[in-house]
Amino acid sequence: MNEDSRKPTRRSTIAEIQGHEWLVEGPPHDKIPDVGVEAIVAKRIIEQDVVLDGIPERNLATFVTTWMEPEAQAVIAENLHRNFIDHAEYPQTAEIEKRCIRMLAQLYNAPGETTGARTQGSSEAIMLGALSLKWKWRERREADGKATDKPNLVFGGDVHVVWEKFCRYFDVEPRIVPLQPDKYVIGAEDVEPHIDENTIGVAAVLGTTFTGHADRIGEINDLLVGLKNDKGLDVPLHVDAASGGFVWPFLYPDTEWDFRLEQVRSINVSGHKFGMVYPGIGWLVFREESDLAEDLVFYENYLGKTDATFTLNFSTGSAMVLAQYYNLVRFGMDGYGFIMETMKENSEFLAKRLEEIGPFQIVRARDEQLPLVAFQIAADADAPYDEFDIAWQVSAERGWMLPAYTMPPNADKVKMLRALVKINLSRELVATLADDITQACETLEKKGGASKHERKRVKTGVGY
Ligand SMILES: Cc1ncc(COP(=O)(O)O)c(C=O)c1O
Image (cartoon, rainbow, N blue to C red):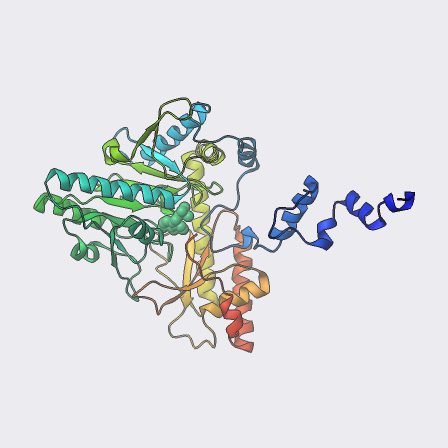
């Protein structure tokens, strides 16, 4: 081998210095590379890939937090190396989880000391809460010497898909109250015909995924109290407050939907939605300790200390628990109140502008609602385009991710657009969004609706 052949080529020298070899070779897709790359190159590969993802600030579809304070981000970054489940090694983190649960129980007016769990999100909290309903129902039936083979759960078509998932995974019959073309939440008269002695519980939503309104929880509670007193049928109510659990206590504190209502036995909330924490953190809170079925708690002596666990998964990060606590103490009641009021004002402003622009109608704008605007083209408008065309056009022109979807059965002929107005959607951005929707409608007036191919690419998911 002569001297020259050992010399790196000009190209590889530059690649080594600049760390850019993957720019021309493409990143590994299918196989772990035989030899790794420099840290900076690995970082750049990822940065270049995610450039093609949507910009979270323009994501009007998601309920999930897309902005946190720099100090909160520092708390997260400094605690990524802690495994939450290692309670023996990280007892303070475990204590902070308990503080959060106590604060939420107090926020939801629990009558006394109680228990709960930190979860990955509302989905895990719902699975655990509903499992507890099933176990408690079985205990009651067994005590009465009655059959336990046909449990059912009653909820409306306005719930998140996780409720149907629970029923399928854990062998419970779902009794789903269908929606109607002009009725997007459920009340007592809807659930009553579905309840019987095999009903493990009723699930009601505080802030639906579809329009942000609440089921008529007070009414459903009254029905269940009546059934208990008149027929001896004790059917618990679980409130899915995934989004509403951090909104209602601040915007509508006088509305009773929580443990002030006798039959509300458990509540879930997503910390990563209006709790203002990045994903994933959720919470499950019981009314009383006895509402958690004892059989579901595992006592393990695995990591150096006997620990009671009630979770679906084991290892998980501590950072988001600490970030939730950060927000609770940092914002306090008045801070959360200010944030919720700000989002509400901005969503009202957007609703007003959309009504002025026309041809839109806002869905139940004056009712208690999450900070969002659910809207549709007015029934009497003669527009040569529909809601899906608008979603496509604003995304094509300005990159807004505005979801268009049809409502669940039996309101599935109804088309809807929905814009979340979170804290990082300032008044200036809201005004721009309204102008951009106007502009998109003007384009559609001239050119007609989106093509078949374009419509296939419209963002239609509602549940985030
Ligand atoms: C009402 C409702 N329940 C449950 C969920 C699931 O929550 P998570 O994403 O926290 O698992 C959502 C998500 O959007 C929701 O809106």
